[in-house]
Image 1 (cartoon, rainbow, N blue to C red):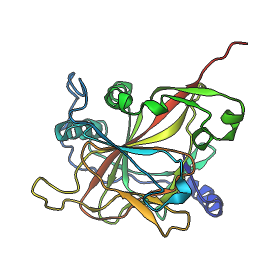
Image 2 (image 1 turned 90 degrees about the horizontal axis):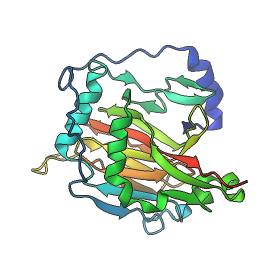
Image 3 (image 1 turned 180 degrees about the vertical axis):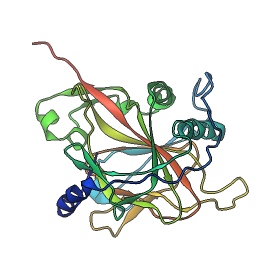
Image 4 (image 1 turned 90 degrees about the vertical axis):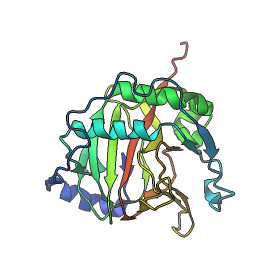
Length: 279
């Protein structure tokens, strides 16, 4: 769920009744494609971690906020396979992405969000993706005394939240020329049985901004972290096989406008369960 400015909420709720027509189908990369059994087997081919230091990057208001970039999580071939498998679930149709407006409702609000989306629930894919990156982010395996991430309630109750998995719901996003996701903060997702909740967002970039010869394939489309006054920014540029992980709470970000080309990403969440304590 995403946090929507209060002034927009009533308008969005009134718009909920509007039907959102699907995009015209595109030709799937490989019709009826299924992932090979060997998909994502073994470690990441060349994983490198880079921490985002908001203070050094001129966003000091986010001191202590957690975000990292992991490069080399997947190969270009693996990314192409994943896109093909996602498209095969919808015969190549990318529905227009909606905005969560609270109360279990969604609405089309293209002043806020404009892109195509495929929703594909697949626990096996997410388990393999988490296995690729889990060892690289040990500090988020267990959350305790970390109010900046969990909020003050779990902090005051001295709760410990332990990572369980990635959310099986993959949101595959397709941005073409003129499309974007305006500035917002991500919200916590809680499972229907209320046993798990999310605290971190995962973005996996599925195509490159430039080719091997340096020719530009995509202009725009960065994931941008904004200062609260929207003056200063940090851009994370799409790169095939790159993962961006960051906390949901109090981190204003956007999907920058795509000027030309196509941006393909996968978005999901890192899920946690409350550690049981002895009575």
